[in-house]
Image (cartoon, rainbow, N blue to C red; front, side, top):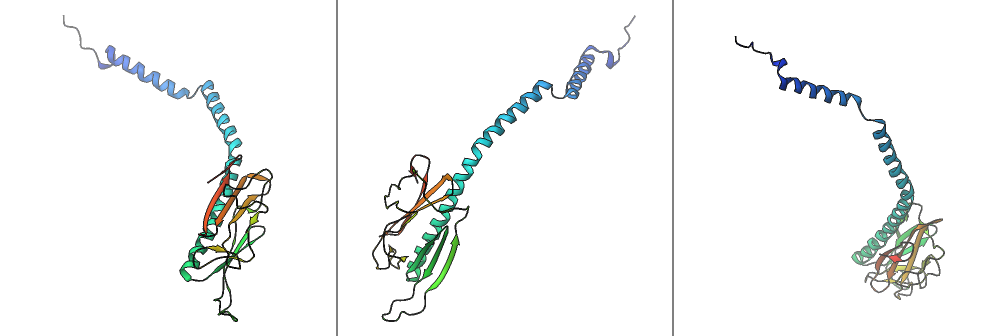
Length: 212
C-alpha cells in the first residue's frame, strides 16, 4: 500500500527551520543582558573621564594659538598694505589685548601732507592679552623678554613702504610679543618680528620649550 504524502509542515527539514526561526526571535526579544549593559556603561564612563581630563588643556592650547594667529595675520596684512600703498603704517600695541594700525602722513618737512589715518583697531580673541608667565623663557629668536611687548626701539614703531619694521627714527628693530590668558600657562604664545624684513613668526610654549 502506498505511503500517504506528508504535508510540508511535517517534513523534518521544515520543522528544523521553524525551530531556528523561533529561537532567533526569542533571542531578539530578550534584548541585551545585564552584563552586556554594564560593560557598555563602564566603557562610556572610562571615555567620559578621559575626555574630561584632557578637554580643558586642549581648549586652552587652541585658544592661545587662535589668538596668536589672529594677531600674526593682522601684522602681516598691514606689512603688505604698507608696501602696496607705499606708505608707512604705524602699529600700536595697547594693553591688555588691543592693536591699532595708523597710516602715517607723507613726510614733507616742515609740514606733512595729509593727516594720519587710523586704519583698524583689533581686540585679540579668546581673552588673550599681552602677558608673560613665570618660568617661561625668551623665544629662540632671543629678541628680549623684559616685558610682554619688547619693541627694542623708540616709539612709535611701524611697517615701512620698503617692507621693514622700524622705530620712529627709521632704524630696523626686532620685536617679541608675548600672549596668554591670566593663570593659564597652556595659552602661552609669542610672536617675533625680524626688523629688516618684517617677517612675523608665531611660537607656542608646549610646557618645556617654544615650538613653531
